Amino acid sequence: MRTMEGVVTIVQEGRFQLQDDAGVSHLFILSPGAGAETDQLTPLPKRQARVRVRYEPAENVIGNLAQSIALTDA
Image 1 (cartoon, rainbow, N blue to C red):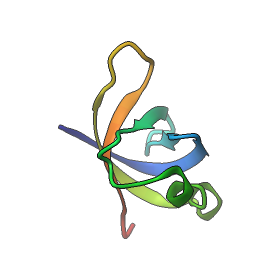
Image 2 (image 1 turned 135 degrees about the vertical axis):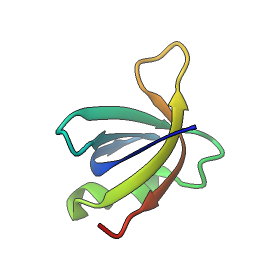
Image 3 (image 1 turned 90 degrees about the vertical axis):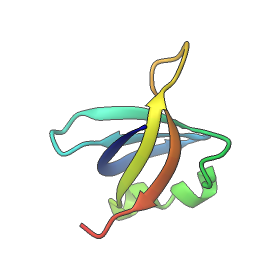
């Protein structure tokens, strides 16, 4: 499984966008087993929260399937 860190910039209906340290934006779709709900992610863009996402490439869509998301200290 892959991991990525960055800042959450957009959250909408089970999807979120993360901007990595190089300034590249990545689209993620929450996996049903991710342990997070859209309501929990909604405040993150306003806080410019830094997170670590464990993910795998999603099939038949542009984006990645987030298996877990956690706030980081940095």
